[in-house]
Each structure stands twice: as structure tokens, then as C-alpha cells.
Amino acid sequence: MGDSVSTDHDWPEPVVPVQSIADSGAAFIPTRYVKPPADRPTAATGRQLDIPAVDLGHLAADDPAKRQAATRAISDACRDWGFFQAVNHGVDGELVRAVAAVWSDFFHLPVAEKKKLANSPTTYEGYGSRLGVEKDASLDWGDYFFLNLLPKSARNHDKWPKLPLTCRETTEEYGRQTVKLCGAVMKALSVGLGLHEGFLEEKFGGEGGAGACMRVCYYPKCPQPELTLGLSAHSDPGGLTVLLAADDCVPGLQVRRGHEWVPVRPLPGALIVNVGDQIQVLSNATFKSVEHRVVVNAMTDRLSIAFFYNPNGNLLLEPAKELVTLECPPLYHPMTFNQYRQYIRKNGPRGKAQVESHRIIYNNSYA
Ligand code: OGA
Ligand code: NI
Image: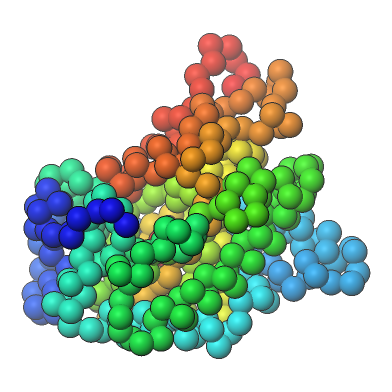
């Protein structure tokens, strides 16, 4: 696409891959990565909570009661937790392993090789190590690769890795199958809102209108994991996120539940699904886009693949008229996703600050 060759100069300061700090064998992390005490990972509270698990195979069951129960389970999870684990999700298990393997191979290439695909803050496509363009900002202990998948016109293969050789086709096939999974979840959520099953998909732009992108996250092992985060607390700006925790035995992702951070323990073969800000807005906060963060550890690297299913970037999105009443007025100002996503690109992860900043302020008591 139209952006110029990206260099470090597009960022406010040179970008240092976290992997190169980790590989240097340093015993201490640079101060830029040290979080304020309140944001540091806290020891487990002892109470073992888990995000709900839903068998998506039931959505296609012959028995209507089974279909309804699965639809209900998805809605309940997205209302209460903003997150669930999808088992029997329809994405081929071999493909899930293959996409994890190609991206693991990519991140094991030498840093200099990956830096040839270094990204810029204009589009974020490519290999990067920071979100946000503020100079001297606090940094997270993670590298990533970002790419666009949909609309197809936004695919920029020049920016995709040439190695491993199967990277492109495996990623595209994973994208195709994951879009289907998102379609099934979008239907269930539409029905959960009491609307027709195509409702959310239409709001996303209808057939061929939605957007999709992927962020492969690589969290190198860290000599002082208790002082930093792999990814600071944030809510996802888009529609739905499907997360593949490639090393499912390496913990890292945590989900906010009130004042607690609940560690996600991925079930073997499961994909983790969560609601982003756009579905919170469209559903007028029936479904919650919940803050989450990633902690790192001293023993192993961790790789995850976040697939983002988004509304078309040019459509004005606002709380669905069908859900708005006098008692239940619209909670958010209309905006396009293209406008909306600039915030996280400029400011980096900032909890739920962005969606809150779009709230409509009412002077009376009911909103
Ligand atoms: C993200 C994200 C979680 C993870 O990329 O938005 O939340 O486990 N990733 O890497
Ligand atoms: Ni996220």
C-alpha cells in the first residue's frame, strides 16, 4: 500500500526488539519496561476462577434445544465475562498447529532478518515492538507481527514474511476458517440481543464488507517478569478477537474480573474468543469488551496469535436503534472504526480509556 519504506525514524525513537534484550542475557530489564507497582503482576489470589468454555459444535446440532443452549452460553459469557474458550470451534486442528508452527519459525529467525520487515506507525503492518508513538513511553515486554487479511484489497503481501515458505498460504487459510468461526459467534450474539441472526454481520458491512487483521505476539522470556507486562491492560478496539495461545501450557493471558486478574488456562485445542469495543458499542454495553493483559515469565518464550474481526472501517457505528429506549438511551457517540483505531495506535494500550471516552454523558440519573 502507499506507505513509504518504514524505518526506525518513523517511530519517536529507535525500536529495540525485546528479543534482542532477552538474548543479550541481561539479568535486569531496562527501566523503560518496569511498570508502576500498581500495574505489576500480582501473585495468584488462590481462588481459581476460569472463563466459561462453550462447545461450538452444538450450534450446528440437530436438536434445537442444544443449539439454543449453545447460543445462550455464548451470549451469557460475552455479557458476564466478555470472554470464553471455544472448543469444537470448527477451525481444523492440523491447521491450528501449522499456523502456530510457521509463526514460531518466523520468530526464531535472526532479529536482523525480521527487521527487514520492520513496521511503521502509519499502518503497523510488519514486525514491531511497540504500540503507540509517544516518546519515552513505558514499553511492554513483547514483539509482534501485524498484518491485514480483510478486505482482500488491504492485504499487502510485500509486507508479509517470505519465510517460512508456507507462511502466506497457512495464514490465509487460518484466516478463512477463523472468519467462519467469527460468523457463527456473531449470529449467536445477534440472537442473544433479541435481533435477527444477521444483525451484527450487517452492521459490520455485510457480505465481504468486514475487516480482519492479525497480530502474532511473541513474548521472549524475561529476567524480571514480576516487574513488567508482556502486554499492558487494554480492551481490543475491534469487533471480535480469536486468540490462539500457541504454547497452551505456557500461561500469560489474564482477564479482568472486578478487581481481580483471572489467568486464562487454555484447554487443549481451544481458541479464546473475546468481545471488542465495537460490539460493546453496537450492543449498547449488553456485551462487554473486557480488559486483559499478558504477564511474562523467566522460563519460556510464549507465542500467541490474535485474530481480529472488525467492522468495515468506513461505516458509522453506534448503539443499535433497536436496543435503545427512553429508559435505555444510547451510551456511545457514533464513530467509524477507522477513526476509532487511531487511538490505540497513537497512545498504546490504555485499559478501557478509549471506549469510556466515547460515552455520552447524561445529566439525569438513569444512564
Ligand atoms: C492482543 C492480546 C493476548 C495474548 O494482541 O490484543 O490481547 O495472549 N493478546 O497475546
Ligand atoms: Ni487484546
